[in-house]
Image (tube, rainbow, N blue to C red; front, side, top):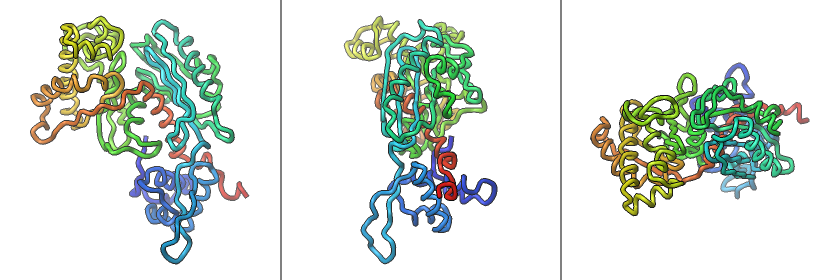
Length: 408
């Protein structure tokens, strides 16, 4: 998924010239540090001023870009009119299902949350049809708040497992007990017919959360150019983000760091292997070892010096350090962002992770690894899923922008 404005891409010279130019202009407006004017668009994209102005007019008419009041003129000529992402017109619905919770977020092009719904349910006890019917209920709750004049442009579902993006199938989600599940059909049957009326997609929850963490708003990446995102829930997922884009691998399955092995003779994992990282640092493993019900209770028990918690946190921190050293040596990445439940324990894990990185990371003498905690938010995958759906608008705004002749 392309998320950064790239002036080197230049103006399209053949094929779908208009569509390419619309995307180029939209991405520039969305990615800009300050609101640009038409003259800035022309200069940044290499278009003539008349072409840039026409593209802006079409994006404004489509509800993708808005214009604010002209700035006071500082020289002769027309005053500059700042351009911004448009609020409340085109919206996407991000959905998430995980082992113990689900979420829905209705988000517009500015990144504003128009509606939100959450549920805490142990979905492992439900069939895929029952689970996704509940997610469809959250979606219906959010769609009830769709603003007047607003249009739903996409629905994206985030799941903790392997997905086939081309068929929208969940191939395997071990912690949910799912194999070969068609969520589109089950959401439709559960009361969400919109999955057949707008763009629909399925993605891994860690990939979606990484997109959200790595962006300030749809179309505008944040300050981290390259980082490895670790998502901590019952299991552990990850995503490698480079220049605002998630590296998915050849089949879209990259990032399953929770199933890298720490000890081939370690505890049995739900994936069928032994000694996987998530059997040491996943929330389920930690809460079972400590005998508590939440990751916050694990942390408090560790701070209180409870022996089981001290042993569990130390083992989890060391396991994370081993996994991150391997990932760093393989991927040349030294910035790690911890999300979900992992963010709760970052400071407790830090000395144990650092010890392994100091010993095993080849780049350690030349760089200082950055271990960053994202703000804990179990709905981050739902936010990211909405961002993914909105990115499709920026990829092809021509779908929502009729040519000038059609508007006349």
